[in-house]
Image (tube, rainbow, N blue to C red):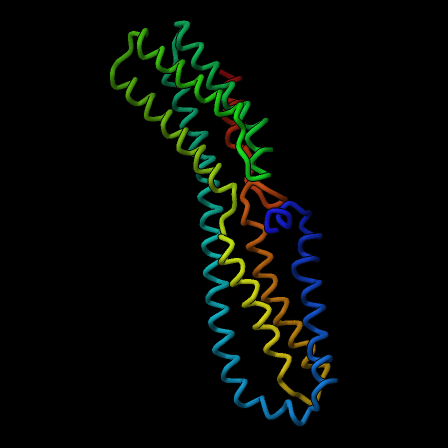
Length: 259
């Protein structure tokens, strides 16, 4: 469900996550007032107020914790893309030279990056990975091994070359892993149920001004569901309008072409 919501346009996902639940929440006090008289509801105010304060604080801490964790993992995915592009640039420079093996390895690196943009990014939107890109990475390793076997290069250069290749591989695995979603299903269950219960708690307070109570309930619902909207928007770092683009890798490819 979170993948489906994250893939929608922001206005549509915001409507489904924030506007619709808030509208339903604002009808709650009206329906409760029709079922129970004001005098009966006002008896809940004193005791329920203390309980609501506790419930609200607990849920606010949980929601803030989830938002921070989701944002940190989103930043990790962005860092993985930057790391992959940086390792590629360093590897390209270490492979400088006119010998055929180095030229073939640079071509294999360029092919891998182009295929990552053309195939990996669309696949990551659906929580998948591209087998073609994995094959291109395997070919890149084979070309690098051939350079190490045949070329007359300093051992330190070869060590650094494979270190950068390993860094590139780890960065790809990190972005593929994070593309599958950050927030686990159990936490989603707690966040959604906790948000609904926190908003529903306000239905059983009693105030003489029903309109004011409805507006206060709506305000609380907007805050709660906007927090959930933020988490949904960044839960899949490579899906939907709020996503990580392959711009760093595109910049490296442009630099390769210039060279």
